[in-house]
Length: 321
Image (cartoon, rainbow, N blue to C red; front, side):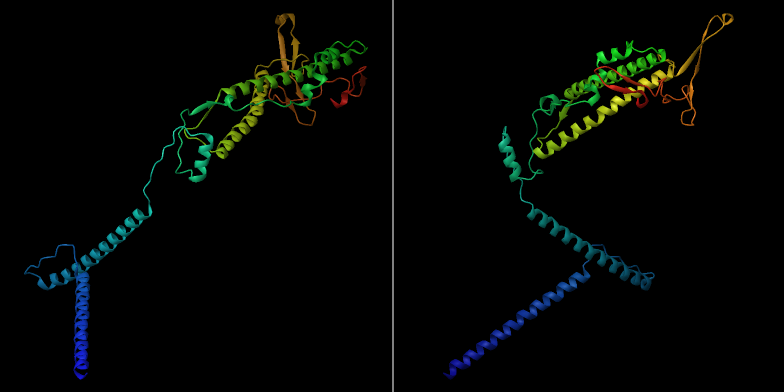
């Protein structure tokens, strides 16, 4: 028993000695590694010369220190770059492309639910299609007056050919009203023709897309196209209307009742030349000349406070027109 215990103690001591030797070696290696890190230098060393040895030795120490700092910085940046590249490569799984030939609408919607829009690509075999293929525009109704009796030919003719009044001036008022309603009828016809033309132009335009759109994205684009169409048609109509007014004003055209320009017949000595001069209105204490502006306006009715009853139709109050 004594021998066995003594041998056991001897073995323990030997193992302790071996363990201490390994730690010393590891410590020695760490010290050497630290020394290597401190003195590592990727740059060429500066060679000494015999002249000015003390000054050069001081400069060499400063240069070597800067070289060592630059070397450490280079190593750190290199290690960081390697870590970033390895991490990025490990996180990005390899991309596998799966091609589905001629997918149906149901298959495409299922693929949309499975994959994100950035990873799903479905190029169109036909990138353009006319609007008439999938859009239909039909005006529901125009302004109420465009479907009323007031712009009908019977009502306009009734105002013009009225012979039940004794006063000539009152007859003139009726003819003026007839022309106004006739103009209103022309505006309604022009609006209908313009809308029909714009619809035909809209149908001939093409919807272009190189990729198959989602239902939501497609609906948003179509709604935007239709809203823009509805917004532009009235603007185009007003442009045409303003163009007609400006054309009449620029060419100094006279209307039937001479409310914008006066005509004067010259004397025989002047060979009966027709002279014209613009009419100036001052209805709101503001002077407005028809030669300078095309928006001058006033009532051209000659009798304002008369009420006329057209049998079987409606009462017309001239002072409200």
